Length: 344
Image (cartoon, rainbow, N blue to C red; front, side):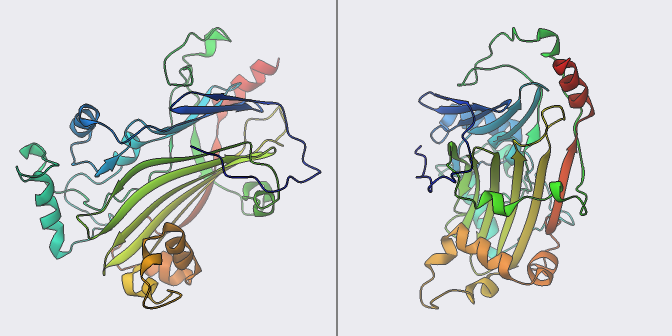
């Protein structure tokens, strides 16, 4: 995985001390009390897919990257936040679609399911999974907190000799609505577009499926770390040909400029859009060239440039609960306590 070339650095932005670690499948940066690790592996082999299938109870996407993940660790407070494939697929509806699930029912949905459960299929599954589930793999997964457990760059457990009494403590984390009057609760786009060097960059694919050649469903996580902050974009993109487009973004931002005596301030912004296929098709630069309809960046731009009434309220009239935008900040009471103790 290569880091894209950085623009010319801003002369007023000093680069803080940081450490980069690498292995064949992982990259880590340690910077400003954070340890950030991106792990990227090839598509999961059969044994890993079998185990994940048994755990989830649904047929897996054609390209499942079961070992890929992105992990953020705030070292002083022992707060850990992760994006992983099993957790993302765990939020796909397993069972009959219900109100709010945004079910997409088209003629070839049953054909697609049969292609995964037929004995002659290369994706043969046990008959016990031939049951309803969301064949589009729609997920509103925004990452998750998990218990602190010291590991090396490849995810192997290691002893935690630093403050061992805190090792088993998991901070109580809840997310609350951001204060619209507090400018620190907004993602500062000016800071993100500034010409600062990129110290760390990674793209972590979690899954992709072509829906039996009738569209595409993908989940990709990107992170970049600059001298003053880190920014994460997790993007789920769905295209069901001649039916609809759907997208769910999670933006995750932290500034290293936060006062060192306070718990880390994170801004988490989730946004969902949806529109009928033909509505997005109308925005093609050239009507005869359909190639942009397979580009998640074009789809994102087309959906976000529509009036919110169209793409974030009406959508494609599926009733999907993921529509709209929500900005949140974490309440980390236990993190605050631990962090203050570590400062004393």
